[in-house]
Image 1 (cartoon, one colour):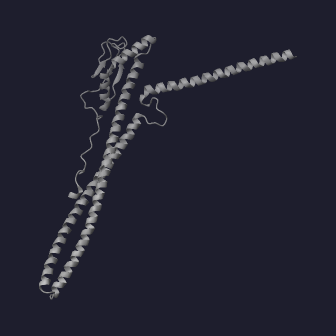
Image 2 (cartoon, rainbow, N blue to C red):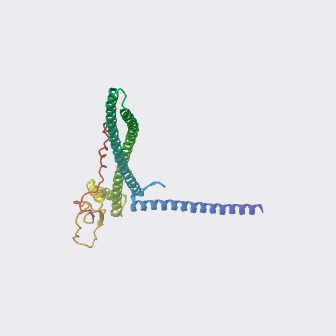
Image 3 (tube, rainbow, N blue to C red):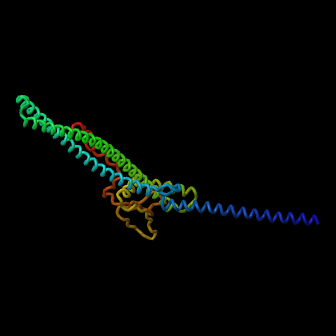
Length: 312
């Protein structure tokens, strides 16, 4: 009885162990399949859009970054324009306040001269002229009112000059922020053009180097990369920069004899057996102007930055 029990136990344990091995094997296969599927999806994603390769979740792609920086650039440009208007208005107010102070100072001086003359006349009449006394008192009251108005005008002028200084600083900051946004946009655009070129080269390698052993594929990749030289990279980037159609890699049908390539097309390396009379690239019209991917414009001349307020 014990013998049968032992055999049954051993048999059951073997079946259980076999089941566990199968479960583990199937589980490992599923995990491996998922991993390979993810890797395959990422490779496919790269060749479809290399700009999102290895992009951590939540980060912006280069295209999204450009859109965001362009929006920032426009916002700062608008801010700069608004600050320029504010500064112009502040400058006008300071100019008007300065003119008002100057006019009041002239009136005060003129009124003081009138009072001096009346005081001399009053002194000469020994204070007996009631009309002179009345006129003198009126002029003194007018002078006091003018002095009070002048004091108020001077304080207002001082306040407006302070506002103008603040406005100038706000404009300077807006200019710096605008230039920074323009620079970041330009850099991101340049990176995107580089990414497109790298993706184009990768696509060409995948399309041309389809078959062969490891040695043959390595030689094919090397020759394709050499054929897509830095000069052709510059042509590619010029097309993208000028907002024309992106250059295309074209394979000639083997049945077509003496193929006629479109204008602005170039054969890939004719010394390579992988590309000779088989592959060409159609570029854009090189005579069209290149889009602005250059340095952002320098800061415009500061709006009367160097003009001393004391001279107003």
